[in-house]
Structures are given as C-alpha cells and as structure tokens.
Image (cartoon, rainbow, N blue to C red; front, side, top):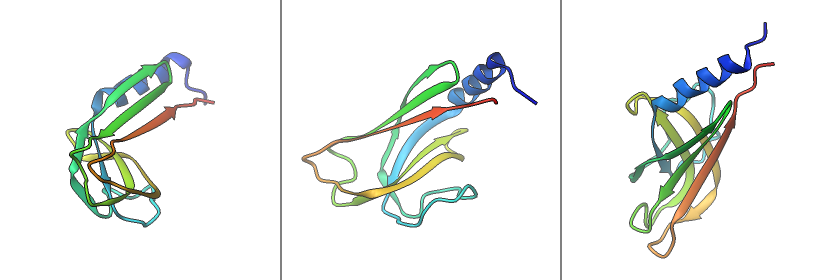
Length: 115
C-alpha cells in the first residue's frame, strides 16, 4: 500500500495542529518508542514551540531562554501534543550546561515518507 502525497500532507497537518510545547530534562537513558515522558523533567524549560510545515516536512523549534533551566545539565528534549498529554518526540543528547549566559534553541526536523 502506498499513501498518496496528498494523504501524507493531510496527516502531517493533523499532527502539526496537535503540537503544544517542548520541554527539556536531565535524564540520560536512551529513548524508546514506548516512552511517555522525559526521565527527569526540568519544569521551567516548558515552552510553546514554533512550527513550520511544508508538505510532508515540518520543523519544531523549542527555545530555552536565558531565564530557564539554569543550573541544569540539559540532556533530553521532548515535543508534546494533544494538550500536553502525548509525547511526539524525545531525544537524548550530550549535556548542555545551562546558565543565564546562554539560550538554547533545539530544532527538530520531521520528514514523513509514504513509500
């Protein structure tokens, strides 16, 4: 079965419409598809995200400002949807030692394929 380009674009639009926010945490366990949350959330990193969609591709930009997450080694990043109840994406990275001297911009690019 092949989903048409139009069907993929519509499906992506539905996902994009449900995205709410991003958060960061300090956990180091590699993510699994069955994960539902971050391992260790840094509460003040929760923020609305900017989303840009073009056809079957969309990017999500999560900004952790100079006032957020200070004193934490940020290692895990999450994008949530459905009124913040569903994890769309989680990734674990090298630690970013967050201080008031820096802002962190996490950009995640999704490309949904149908073949």
